[in-house]
Length: 132
Image 1 (tube, rainbow, N blue to C red):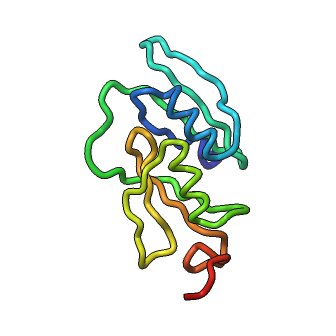
Image 2 (cartoon, rainbow, N blue to C red):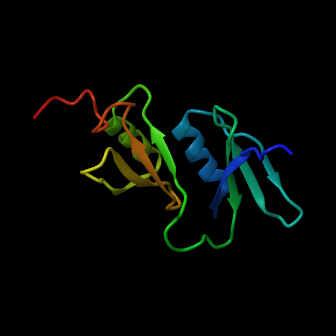
């Protein structure tokens, strides 16, 4: 018997089309397939390098309270602060600057929390910052 394969990370969304657009732009990819099931629920994929997609699933009422799963994004060619600025320009907002940690907590346009970390090996996430 073969082990399971992770197909997608699913995010509930009131407007899955708009939220898929946010995540596609945040990750620098194109929005993937859009489908509707027999119950009228809309699904939109955001293909991610490595094979595991984000799947935005339409819900009438998002689940209240703390999300028990979240995404961690790591900067590739910019500083953590530059990436946070780019993401907030796309519609995210800073939820917790977490000054004592190498990440900053943001929320996407529908309030789903995610973290932004600096490049690998950057303890404070911003290797290019001038020393104080």
